[in-house]
Image (cartoon, rainbow, N blue to C red; front, side, top):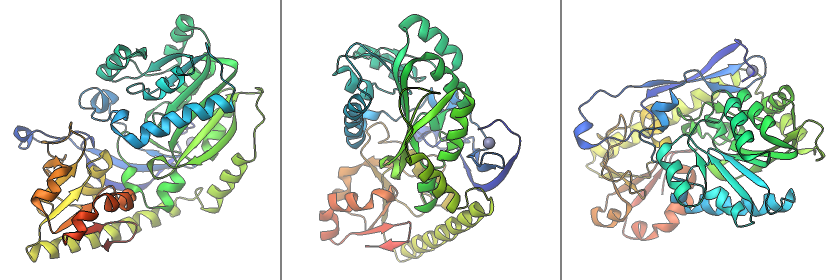
Amino acid sequence: MCDTENLERVMELTPTPPGNNFLKKEELTKVEKCYPLELYHCKNCFHVQLGHVVDPKILYQNNYTYVSATSAYFVKHLRDYAKEMVEKFELKPGMLVADIGSNDGTCLLGFKEYEMKVIGVDPATEIAENATAHGVETVADFFSHSLALNLKEKYGVANFITSHNACAHIDKLDDVVRGVSHWLDKDGVFVLEVGYFVDVYSKLLFDTIYHEHLDFHTVGPFKKLFERTGMELISVQRINPQGGSIRVMAQKAGGKHKPDLSIEKLTNLEQELNFDKSITFAAYAQKIQELGKKLRELLHSLKKDGKSIAAYGAPTKATTLLSHFGITADSIDFILEDNPLKQGLFTPLSHIPVIPTEELYLRKPDYVLILAWNFAEPIMEMHKKFAKQGGKFIIPMPVLKII
Ligand SMILES: [Zn+2]
């Protein structure tokens, strides 16, 4: 992140195709191109990032099956967010609010309700066009410093710039933050939400490591990033999405908001976890290996006993988990998934058929492996009926369990 060459490879997962490249039946025989999934640790600022960057055009512009409105939970999160930010930063009607990686415009609609002017930026052409058609003007492009020059000229200064989980996607973060700094009003605020690597680490969320996530953020490197781009942190808040994220709030250096103690609290935590040492991540990788081995052995022995096994949920991260743990259609009969865009397709690499969740009660598998395992509780709650009918759930992590 700080542009040094001083990087050390600290973790190596099984290479996979882009996690969202689900296949049609006729595509199953073709060779899928796999890309490395390796984590590198910066010896200089202690930032953790992927070593191999897949061309964003390959990742986003063809097969991008994620639309934020498909997740009711996330829609609510974004609506609450707009309200909270309007209150906290005293945003007024008529102000310009921009969203980097605005997806279908869900977040900006929240600000529009407060009569603010909104502008989205998102590279996924079709999604951007749809958002514009639904009242959220969206520029179909990758945000950068040079794009910010045009945006400022065309739309004026931005009072509030926001970004949700898109900054974990952006290869050249320095350039993005320089663009933000250029576009922001002198009293403007930039808020970004990204997965927090402390949560990935302490809750074993290794499956959030996939090609769209180039950077695994912690507060320490952010502090340095903002300092070298003419900005400063105001506050950092830990929040729930993605199993643990941070809401990073920043302004132009010397802006009107007083930085609070949350920043130091989190940088201290990162130090206590030894995030400055590469050995920390080697031990982490070892632990993941062991969990994978246990799960594989369990599935093989169930299969040998003639049991049918389904999996639940086919988010992008399922591709990482299935591939790294070596789980394929040999042990999983099908995956139940709510997203209609994925139903009828097959998972990348592991080639497991994806079918609608309702079929759980028609096909009645003996076991359901919960791939979105950090949501195991609500999923089991939702499907109590399956358990009542004698079905069992397998939760792969953080400790392998059958319930
Ligand atoms: Zn660095």
